[in-house]
Length: 199
Image 1 (cartoon, rainbow, N blue to C red):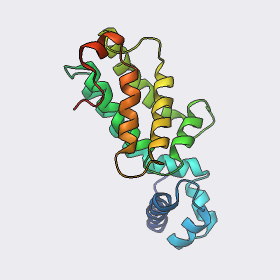
Image 2 (tube, helix red, strand yellow; image 1 turned 180 degrees about the vertical axis):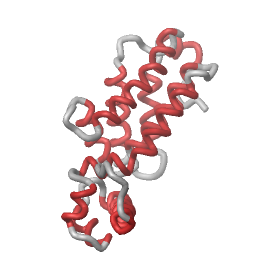
Image 3 (cartoon, helix red, strand yellow; image 1 turned 90 degrees about the vertical axis):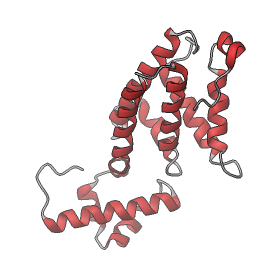
């Protein structure tokens, strides 16, 4: 939300309607859905939409904020888990689900990682920081490869998420994520007990 002051009641109603219609449009047509259609469905003009959300990324970030906050909290909880490899995988599954919630979102998030001007950059950086602690813990335990950076890991997961959405049937994304994750475990870990989809 870009307004610094408390909204008037009518402005708040418009804001909430825009979010509702954007959520529906993005779920049906992806993050490239027409913002004019979003505004029309919400019963407001496109100028009202842009007053609340100056860019498409502002709108996406607002819709995803709760998911990002949940992922950050989940990372803090998983740092206390007994098994660092299962903890990392559990967090990555949630991250993959978030990045795949709307068609086209994986590409948008991947671009935002290296674009400080993006409205999604801060959220992506927060996700990278959350993952970094879990990766460091798994690497220190000798169960996760040390030649992989956190950003490379997240981009690999973005790719698996995108590819999985193009596979027929259910479960494609999780299967590809599990395959990627197995390949990133140390050879010693794979030889002892590969953790491809820990629960």
